[in-house]
Picture (cartoon, rainbow, N blue to C red):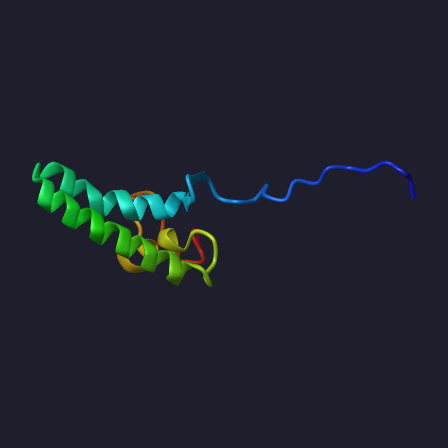
Length: 97
């Protein structure tokens, strides 16, 4: 084996981050905080801020044991996908027959 040492990055597959939150956690936080900003009331903003922090913390705890992209999978599972006119449904196995 050669004597050369190579640098192997440790965080290559990590999701994008802002501060200490992952991108999907920021989506949860921003979605809840946005109505508080629009209401233009400081007390309501503080209430929405507290709710956003609490729910983001809870989402982080739930997500800790799950797969990457858990929020996107949960939304797809709950809401379904868009219906396209030309693409057949996924349960149809034989397209031309």
